[in-house]
Length: 112
Length: 112
Image 1: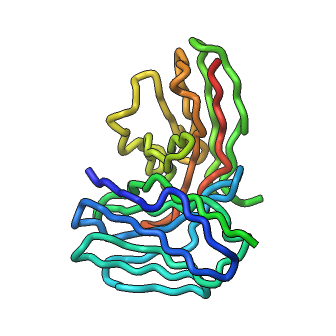
Image 2: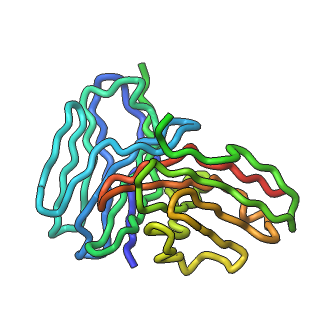
């Protein structure tokens, strides 16, 4: 089955800095890569996703890049703000499957 | 609130007891998922339904776990003869398409 590795497990940045979280996946047939944000005590919420026919996608301060050859994808957050502090999960899903495999999460701490 | 709801939000039980959780998906979402999440981990897939049919179960799912979605709307997850290792957050998610999953707030289970 699919295996997703996520790094780093913890990321601490100053407000205004950029943050990058990286994930690798094992199954070359994976074609959908969502990112979820989970604030303390709250439910995971989708913040951005990318499909395998696209190399990069942006939404305001967040962007996701995908390198299918290397089987890795990354979340980029620019101009970080304290409210970006949360746990971020990447996931990968193989084509034909409805079941995503999640990474272990990255705890992002943005210091004001 | 038209989002995914779960009940109860917290459950404390003694080892050996049975527990049942309920999930109400977003109306008209035909796919419903159950996940387990422990501290420092991403959501781990347990089982998934398309309408009332249970299409897949994790190989890691003990036979003490059973799930139903009798009318293709709400779902229940039952754990029989609970063990301390069952202590976790149990998340439900629903989706109407192939992509974004909407998560519920979760049921936190503590087995003493």
